[in-house]
Amino acid sequence: MELILKTDVENLGFTDDLVTVKNGFGRNFLIPQGLAVLATPSTKKVLNETLKQRAFKEKKIIGDAQKEADKLNGLEIKIASKAGEGDKLFGSINNANLANSLEKEGVVIDKKFISIAGGIIKRTGQYEATIRFHREVISNFTFDVVAEKK
Image (cartoon, rainbow, N blue to C red; front, side):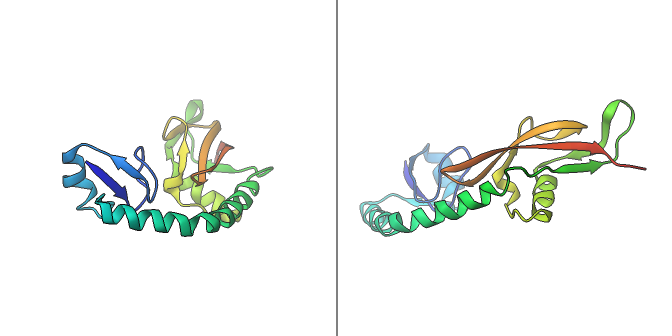
């Protein structure tokens, strides 16, 4: 089944991509959730027109995303969390905590565009995250998880 994505879908594609999926996934999930539309000849023509119009606007969008990504250079984030014996955290640190810390430093990014290697963090130390500002602008960022001072 051929579909045109209306929004970014993780592990499938980006907005306005033409994708082929199994019938059940398209009929039962993507279309009812409003994530995609059926790729008929008329919707393909509309898609081609929007892609042509958006091509020159894309350069500015990529430039803005690159400026946001450049803000990460030299930025040191330390996320403080309560820790017990052996540097083990009470609770965990995830992409939402990193998004909040970045927002305090002036870099606004949605938590769904942040991917921490290994998922959630349960120990103090240095970790790496991949941050996607745009489909063509992806940045790796290193941050520290430290024990909260008592």
